[in-house]
Length: 249
Image (cartoon, rainbow, N blue to C red; front, side, top):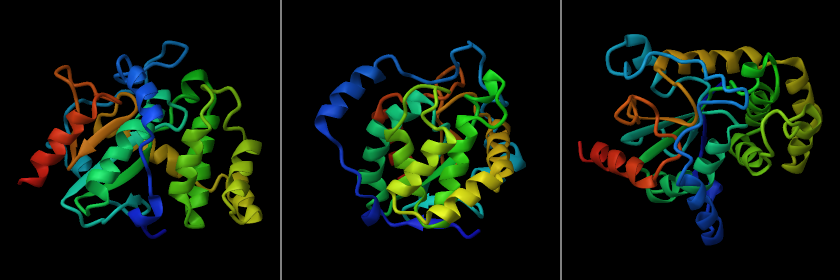
């Protein structure tokens, strides 16, 4: 499958002051999501090896099948590993991502890539639960040129982990809401066409050192705190500083 590049004119994300205020309160304590309700940590890879492991260097670049927002040839490549059920990925989507898009992606300075790191169902013993199914569904929507619209639809409809928000029926309804060819979408999702692709993306994230979601990499470098843990949905200024430094190189 060829890379799907979506122009930022189609994205048109806008910050809504009221939502920013609410999300800001969440960010005060939402540093990163590494634990599920069961208290089991996400699959953990080796930390801070992005610049030393050749396999990781290959993973942390635009690859065939990636969904790219903005210019793939931009000077800065931003990769987010996330789980569509992750509440802090939802915070990131509502607060930080729009600022990255408006200030950098729309200016042609940053290419933004989503990568699946589906784990919030498997830590509860479900091999193909809502984390994996939602990721597969987004890829099925991508076949019809609407990955990013479906990506947005999923985050808008988060309602807790493994509580049915991303059931098969709901995922199919979302496709209908977006005007997708329902028959093609249903067939894609039911067949498990992208089951292995989602697992591979998650495995690659583990190799790259992802230890929770959202996990960010800017020009192949993990955005981490002093302990080597991803900063998750922390302040936008943290990401802005790194992006600005990369743009000056």
